[in-house]
Amino acid sequence: MGAMGSGDGTAGGEAGGDVVGVVDFLGLGMVSGNPMRWRMPLTDDLLNSAGTLWGGVGLSAFVAAAELAVERRCVWATVQYLAPIRSGGELQMDIDLGGQGIALTQASGRGTVDGQLVLLAIGTFGGDGPHDLQFSEAPEIAPPLECPLRSMPAPWGGGILRQIEQRTPPGMAMPDPLGQPGSGRTMLWMRLRHGGTDGGRDVAHDVGALAVLADLAPSGISEAIGRPTFGTSLDNSIRAARLPDLDASGWVLMDVTVEAVVGRVAQISARMYDEGGRLLAVAGQSARLRRLTRQAEKA
Image (cartoon, rainbow, N blue to C red; front, side, top):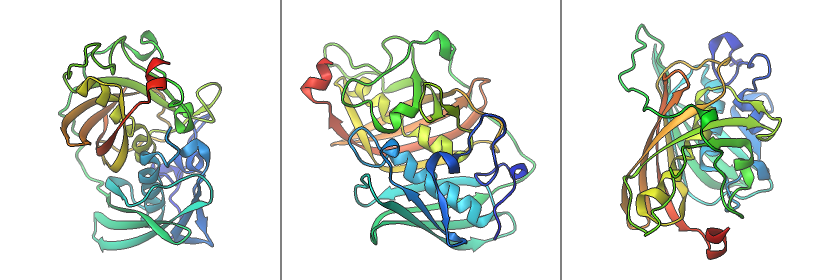
């Protein structure tokens, strides 16, 4: 199958102007002209601060590759991680087709590194129809440029976080000074910048790019449990709330709810809106809790 053109609004299209598509952002490439097999270099700028692949990147790679393979937009997708994915080498993503109907196609993905299975993904693609309805309302929050920049203490600000600009009202996403559990709700402005937040290029708001940003949902864990804590992905999911627009980019508001903490795992949901209050996607994940080091807490 051939890749879809820009008018189709998928990862296969080329974003206009100074806006970059998620395929270019990831460095994703087809293997030997086979649209069912893709590869992605495992570079440092796709990692989390712990030195493993940013969870949203694995989901994004599946979404982008599968959209091109099946020539349909992503409606929903999820990824489960089976082993840590570290820098060096490349991730190979193999796409398999399931049921193919008039409106929807089911597809799965197997991600391997040096032949080892490291992730499994599945999703639904298609969904064109007459409806474009939104029932969720964006929360009231100051515009992004009126919110201060949010940065992670050293050494937790490296990797892909250099390409995600974050802004949030003062005190939000912070633990209680006395260590008391909070409300479990955090709101965060963010935008994805290919090449870095200083001088980089915006990445278009397709589902793959939103999957990358959605992996900031564990930012709400510290506020929820009252201690400086971050989370690493066990799984990530994304549900599209509207058709992607390759000319749309810029700030995304994520309204995060830590639904529960079970042992050392946080169960998280999030809604993602553009600056106009349009719901873009609904995300979710389970995240393993990891405490910041004492040195990082004091930084």
